[in-house]
Length: 505
Image (cartoon, rainbow, N blue to C red; front, side):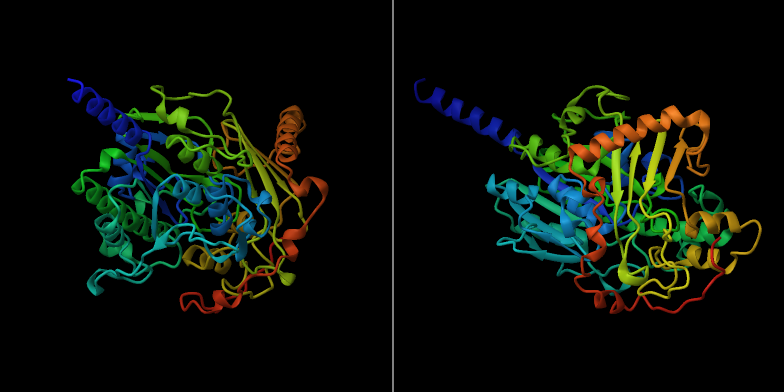
């Protein structure tokens, strides 16, 4: 008996330690709005793997990126900090420096084995790091030729994950970053026809015209979301086959919204609202949808708390782990009543390489956006054919972009053209209860003065608390050099061939 009891205690202690240290699979698509997933009601985009995570875990109905641009969003995810706190890490083609703490290395310090495939932090340069912040990024396995099509990256993300699982150290928990390049532009135009999709099923953001060409591009974009979802499904099957799925915290999201006009590089919901779901049986009660406002700045502290690693004081995000563990649906934490998003500079879209700085606060009922340089063009200088996207360079090249430019003077299309490319006032305010698509700016309405002032006060308080240099009048983001602007020109999918269009008003 004296020998059995110590063995029993040791076994229980080991089990408890392992339960406190789940494996982690973090899957992130590239440029996907929340509205384009089955769990959020999209019937045209079929996402059974994401829907499974949502069904067996928790689905966040109001999750938002920290910034609607690839590298800044990923900087915020990794560091748990707002983009203005990260210097050059807050812009595209910037630098993420080793002076900033990233949660992945904290996991490694706690005994986790790190791995990754596909797109991690980019485009830009990681500088000063003595360790690989994602561990080994193995993207060596490629899709068979008969599974490739234009618009898809050749990487077989799921096969690379399977290779990681087969060769991992089973004595360690693991963290794996599965990052696809889909549904980033450009697409296989017209692929929706061969896939049996129907134009009438396409789910359009309200700021885009209801036209067959636009609907077709939405469906082509949806096919690439489905490509991401298939890899996610294969990764879940790999975990099941290895007997560790239920010991793995699975988190699925996207870096920001869709790449069509008035979405990516914009602080409207179509640019910043992203899918977010998490699953871990025994820790996350399943079958729940929560309405708390969540930010991707919260991902780092959430993961750290989930594995009992101390959250650094410098992280601005708040852990979502208590909400994930809750038994409740709907509003769980009434203190989570707003999120803040920011944008500084994306690609080469304006003369001098300057950006279009913005900050926004979003509650359940209202969205307030502050445009710091209203004399600039939000999508890029309209008479400047800039690499890599041509005119209006902060909008990815695509069918819808071209359609708006080609039909800019058509009375039915011009309002959409101006919403996408025209100048904007210094302040924007939207009543989301009456105007969920954020089409009618009511910032100058006297009846909204008190509400606007309250939002301004709350935004300013948050920006001051987290030391936003914009609050002090700083604008140094415009002076940061692009680390490698020629990288943009070397991508064969991005050719600067285009058409000018009438200047916006």
